[in-house]
Image (cartoon, rainbow, N blue to C red):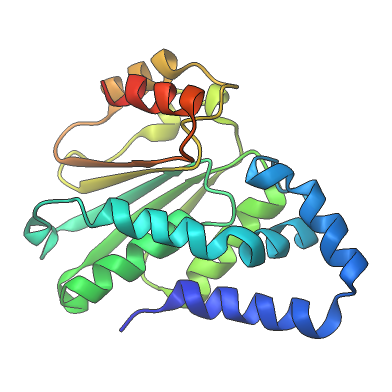
Length: 212
């Protein structure tokens, strides 16, 4: 059974609880801005996992559970694209889910594109994924979504693509129409779009706009 996310989070939680002062915990939590801030220090990354990691994982698993049929992934090459990936929670949770509902021997992860403006978060995502899983190429794209172009999202038409939008579509700093056009230009073949965000009015409107 794949349980990478819980292993990662439990290690972080043990470190925080055994070595951090209450002041350090409070200061790092305030800097998270309710989970909306770009994570720019190791303390921010770790405090996010403690404060929001389990909720983030639960929302992702609920979204994964709505996919009607994943039998098509068996024996096929898979590519992941994680938009605004932070420290890779979306990719880790998806791989845990896929390996737990299928025969791991039949899944081939060819490529993971991690898109994230914070370099420290991007490096942490790569480290977590490399520690837990193997055999794939990890492409780091150190950009905000508003900076993406078609070359960043090039994929193999024959692969099955999973696009992960985890707590990012509600963020109003990028144009949804521009993102849609780039995806529409570059993604052929079979694609799954996994979209989840916090439940609030303006964020929900952006999520619905993108899906429509």
